[in-house]
Length: 225
Ligand SMILES: C[S@@+](CC[C@H](N)C(=O)[O-])C[C@H]1O[C@@H](n2cnc3c(N)ncnc32)[C@H](O)[C@@H]1O
Image (cartoon, rainbow, N blue to C red; front, side):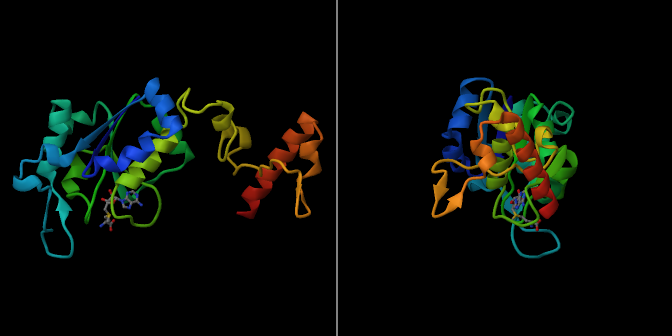
Protein backbone atom coordinates (compact mmCIF):
# COMPACT_ATOMS: atom_id res chain seq x y z
CA UNK A 1 0.00 0.00 0.00
CA UNK A 2 1.15 3.52 -0.80
CA UNK A 3 -0.07 6.37 1.43
CA UNK A 4 0.68 9.94 0.41
CA UNK A 5 0.10 12.57 3.09
CA UNK A 6 -0.10 16.22 2.09
CA UNK A 7 0.58 18.51 5.04
CA UNK A 8 2.17 21.73 6.25
CA UNK A 9 3.95 19.78 8.99
CA UNK A 10 5.66 16.65 7.63
CA UNK A 11 7.89 16.53 10.71
CA UNK A 12 4.82 15.83 12.88
CA UNK A 13 4.76 12.25 11.54
CA UNK A 14 8.26 11.31 12.79
CA UNK A 15 7.12 9.64 16.01
CA UNK A 16 4.44 7.57 14.31
CA UNK A 17 6.73 6.31 11.56
CA UNK A 18 9.19 5.11 14.20
CA UNK A 19 6.61 2.85 15.89
CA UNK A 20 7.16 -0.88 15.52
CA UNK A 21 4.02 -1.73 13.54
CA UNK A 22 4.85 1.06 11.10
CA UNK A 23 8.45 -0.08 10.78
CA UNK A 24 7.24 -3.64 10.19
CA UNK A 25 4.84 -2.47 7.50
CA UNK A 26 7.37 -0.07 5.97
CA UNK A 27 9.87 -2.93 5.69
CA UNK A 28 7.26 -4.89 3.71
CA UNK A 29 4.28 -3.71 1.78
CA UNK A 30 3.84 -0.10 2.94
CA UNK A 31 5.33 3.10 1.55
CA UNK A 32 4.51 6.51 3.04
CA UNK A 33 5.32 9.79 1.34
CA UNK A 34 5.04 13.09 3.23
CA UNK A 35 4.48 16.04 0.92
CA UNK A 36 4.75 19.63 2.12
CA UNK A 37 2.26 22.04 0.49
CA UNK A 38 4.92 24.74 0.81
CA UNK A 39 7.35 22.87 -1.46
CA UNK A 40 5.23 23.55 -4.53
CA UNK A 41 3.09 26.55 -3.62
CA UNK A 42 2.82 29.09 -6.45
CA UNK A 43 2.59 31.89 -3.86
CA UNK A 44 5.50 33.98 -2.65
CA UNK A 45 7.16 33.30 0.68
CA UNK A 46 5.75 29.78 1.04
CA UNK A 47 2.20 31.05 1.56
CA UNK A 48 -0.60 28.52 1.23
CA UNK A 49 -3.68 30.33 2.60
CA UNK A 50 -5.74 33.47 2.22
CA UNK A 51 -8.59 35.37 3.85
CA UNK A 52 -12.10 34.00 3.42
CA UNK A 53 -14.41 35.70 0.93
CA UNK A 54 -17.36 37.12 2.81
CA UNK A 55 -15.21 37.86 5.85
CA UNK A 56 -14.83 36.00 9.10
CA UNK A 57 -12.04 34.77 11.28
CA UNK A 58 -9.14 32.63 10.17
CA UNK A 59 -7.43 31.74 6.92
CA UNK A 60 -8.42 29.23 4.25
CA UNK A 61 -6.11 26.85 2.35
CA UNK A 62 -6.11 27.86 -1.31
CA UNK A 63 -7.30 25.68 -4.17
CA UNK A 64 -4.39 26.71 -6.45
CA UNK A 65 -1.92 25.61 -3.76
CA UNK A 66 -3.55 22.16 -3.59
CA UNK A 67 -3.65 21.89 -7.36
CA UNK A 68 0.09 22.64 -7.57
CA UNK A 69 0.92 20.08 -4.87
CA UNK A 70 -1.20 17.31 -6.43
CA UNK A 71 0.02 18.02 -9.97
CA UNK A 72 3.65 17.96 -8.84
CA UNK A 73 3.17 14.58 -7.18
CA UNK A 74 0.98 12.81 -9.76
CA UNK A 75 1.72 14.68 -13.01
CA UNK A 76 -1.96 14.76 -13.98
CA UNK A 77 -4.88 17.13 -13.51
CA UNK A 78 -6.07 16.52 -9.91
CA UNK A 79 -9.65 16.46 -11.19
CA UNK A 80 -8.74 13.25 -13.06
CA UNK A 81 -6.75 11.88 -10.12
CA UNK A 82 -9.77 10.95 -8.09
CA UNK A 83 -10.89 8.44 -10.71
CA UNK A 84 -7.64 6.58 -9.99
CA UNK A 85 -7.30 6.68 -6.20
CA UNK A 86 -9.13 7.77 -3.07
CA UNK A 87 -8.21 11.34 -2.23
CA UNK A 88 -9.33 11.94 1.34
CA UNK A 89 -9.67 15.42 2.82
CA UNK A 90 -9.58 15.24 6.62
CA UNK A 91 -12.48 17.29 7.93
CA UNK A 92 -14.41 17.38 11.25
CA UNK A 93 -17.72 17.15 9.40
CA UNK A 94 -16.76 14.22 7.15
CA UNK A 95 -17.76 10.55 7.23
CA UNK A 96 -16.93 9.18 10.65
CA UNK A 97 -13.95 6.84 10.74
CA UNK A 98 -15.07 3.49 12.14
CA UNK A 99 -14.03 -0.14 11.88
CA UNK A 100 -15.96 -0.67 8.66
CA UNK A 101 -14.33 2.30 6.95
CA UNK A 102 -10.88 1.32 8.24
CA UNK A 103 -11.36 -2.16 6.75
CA UNK A 104 -12.49 -0.63 3.46
CA UNK A 105 -9.46 1.68 3.30
CA UNK A 106 -7.04 -1.11 4.21
CA UNK A 107 -8.04 -2.92 1.01
CA UNK A 108 -6.99 0.03 -1.19
CA UNK A 109 -3.63 -0.08 -2.96
CA UNK A 110 -3.14 3.69 -2.74
CA UNK A 111 -4.48 6.47 -0.53
CA UNK A 112 -3.98 10.22 -0.58
CA UNK A 113 -4.62 12.14 2.65
CA UNK A 114 -5.03 15.91 2.65
CA UNK A 115 -4.41 17.60 6.01
CA UNK A 116 -6.11 20.93 6.55
CA UNK A 117 -5.11 23.77 8.90
CA UNK A 118 -6.53 27.12 9.95
CA UNK A 119 -10.23 27.36 8.93
CA UNK A 120 -9.80 24.42 6.59
CA UNK A 121 -9.91 23.98 2.80
CA UNK A 122 -11.37 26.16 0.08
CA UNK A 123 -14.54 24.18 -0.71
CA UNK A 124 -13.49 23.73 -4.35
CA UNK A 125 -10.74 21.39 -3.11
CA UNK A 126 -13.38 19.13 -1.59
CA UNK A 127 -15.69 19.42 -4.60
CA UNK A 128 -13.18 18.89 -7.40
CA UNK A 129 -10.06 17.18 -6.04
CA UNK A 130 -11.19 14.98 -3.15
CA UNK A 131 -13.18 11.77 -3.41
CA UNK A 132 -14.48 12.18 0.14
CA UNK A 133 -14.06 13.80 3.54
CA UNK A 134 -13.32 11.78 6.67
CA UNK A 135 -13.63 12.81 10.31
CA UNK A 136 -12.08 11.10 13.31
CA UNK A 137 -14.78 12.44 15.63
CA UNK A 138 -17.22 15.22 16.21
CA UNK A 139 -14.75 17.70 17.67
CA UNK A 140 -12.32 20.15 16.11
CA UNK A 141 -8.54 19.79 16.20
CA UNK A 142 -6.04 22.41 15.06
CA UNK A 143 -5.01 20.47 11.98
CA UNK A 144 -5.40 17.32 9.90
CA UNK A 145 -2.09 15.79 10.98
CA UNK A 146 -3.43 13.93 14.04
CA UNK A 147 -6.50 12.71 12.11
CA UNK A 148 -4.24 11.51 9.27
CA UNK A 149 -2.08 9.65 11.80
CA UNK A 150 -5.12 8.09 13.47
CA UNK A 151 -6.44 6.94 10.11
CA UNK A 152 -3.05 5.61 8.95
CA UNK A 153 -2.42 3.83 12.27
CA UNK A 154 -5.80 2.07 12.17
CA UNK A 155 -5.37 1.08 8.52
CA UNK A 156 -1.81 -0.15 8.90
CA UNK A 157 -2.71 -2.45 11.80
CA UNK A 158 -4.82 -4.33 9.27
CA UNK A 159 -1.94 -4.97 6.88
CA UNK A 160 -0.48 -8.47 7.04
CA UNK A 161 2.86 -8.43 8.87
CA UNK A 162 2.37 -5.09 10.64
CA UNK A 163 1.58 -6.65 14.02
CA UNK A 164 3.90 -9.15 15.67
CA UNK A 165 1.02 -11.61 16.05
CA UNK A 166 -1.72 -11.66 13.39
CA UNK A 167 -4.23 -12.85 16.00
CA UNK A 168 -4.05 -9.42 17.70
CA UNK A 169 -6.01 -7.80 14.86
CA UNK A 170 -8.29 -10.76 14.14
CA UNK A 171 -9.96 -10.72 17.55
CA UNK A 172 -10.14 -7.20 18.90
CA UNK A 173 -12.79 -4.57 19.48
CA UNK A 174 -15.38 -4.38 16.67
CA UNK A 175 -13.97 -7.38 14.76
CA UNK A 176 -16.25 -9.97 13.17
CA UNK A 177 -14.83 -12.55 15.58
CA UNK A 178 -16.37 -10.54 18.43
CA UNK A 179 -19.61 -9.89 16.49
CA UNK A 180 -18.67 -6.20 16.17
CA UNK A 181 -18.64 -5.74 19.96
CA UNK A 182 -15.96 -4.09 22.13
CA UNK A 183 -13.25 -6.48 23.25
CA UNK A 184 -13.54 -8.59 26.42
CA UNK A 185 -11.37 -7.71 29.46
CA UNK A 186 -7.74 -8.86 29.69
CA UNK A 187 -5.77 -9.84 32.81
CA UNK A 188 -2.17 -10.82 33.47
CA UNK A 189 0.01 -11.72 36.50
CA UNK A 190 -0.36 -11.48 39.42
CA UNK A 191 -3.52 -13.61 39.59
CA UNK A 192 -4.45 -11.74 42.77
CA UNK A 193 -3.56 -8.15 43.69
CA UNK A 194 -4.92 -6.33 46.76
CA UNK A 195 -7.61 -8.99 46.93
CA UNK A 196 -8.71 -8.41 43.30
CA UNK A 197 -8.85 -11.89 41.76
CA UNK A 198 -8.66 -12.64 38.09
CA UNK A 199 -11.87 -14.45 36.96
CA UNK A 200 -11.40 -18.17 37.74
CA UNK A 201 -12.38 -19.27 34.24
CA UNK A 202 -9.23 -17.62 32.81
CA UNK A 203 -7.06 -19.75 35.12
CA UNK A 204 -8.95 -22.96 34.32
CA UNK A 205 -7.06 -23.92 31.16
CA UNK A 206 -10.41 -24.85 29.56
CA UNK A 207 -10.16 -23.13 26.16
CA UNK A 208 -13.79 -23.61 25.17
CA UNK A 209 -15.07 -22.17 28.44
CA UNK A 210 -12.65 -19.25 28.12
CA UNK A 211 -13.80 -18.58 24.56
CA UNK A 212 -17.47 -18.58 25.62
CA UNK A 213 -16.74 -16.34 28.62
CA UNK A 214 -14.95 -13.84 26.39
CA UNK A 215 -17.75 -13.68 23.83
CA UNK A 216 -20.28 -13.20 26.64
CA UNK A 217 -18.17 -10.41 28.17
CA UNK A 218 -17.91 -8.64 24.81
CA UNK A 219 -21.70 -8.83 24.35
CA UNK A 220 -22.29 -7.53 27.88
CA UNK A 221 -19.95 -4.59 27.26
CA UNK A 222 -21.79 -3.72 24.05
CA UNK A 223 -25.11 -3.75 25.91
CA UNK A 224 -23.75 -1.57 28.75
CA UNK A 225 -22.48 1.02 26.26
C1 LIG B 1 -9.31 24.00 12.84
S1 LIG B 1 -9.78 22.75 11.71
C2 LIG B 1 -10.98 23.55 10.73
C3 LIG B 1 -12.34 23.46 11.31
C4 LIG B 1 -13.41 24.03 10.40
N1 LIG B 1 -13.36 25.45 10.35
C5 LIG B 1 -14.77 23.57 10.91
O1 LIG B 1 -15.37 24.28 11.70
O2 LIG B 1 -15.19 22.44 10.54
C6 LIG B 1 -8.40 22.64 10.64
C7 LIG B 1 -8.22 21.30 9.97
O3 LIG B 1 -8.01 20.30 10.95
C8 LIG B 1 -8.49 19.06 10.48
N2 LIG B 1 -9.41 18.51 11.49
C9 LIG B 1 -9.76 19.10 12.66
N3 LIG B 1 -10.58 18.32 13.36
C10 LIG B 1 -10.76 17.20 12.66
C11 LIG B 1 -11.52 16.01 12.86
N4 LIG B 1 -12.25 15.82 13.96
N5 LIG B 1 -11.45 15.03 11.92
C12 LIG B 1 -10.74 15.21 10.79
N6 LIG B 1 -10.01 16.33 10.53
C13 LIG B 1 -10.02 17.31 11.45
C14 LIG B 1 -9.11 19.30 9.12
O4 LIG B 1 -8.17 18.93 8.12
C15 LIG B 1 -9.36 20.78 9.13
O5 LIG B 1 -9.35 21.33 7.83
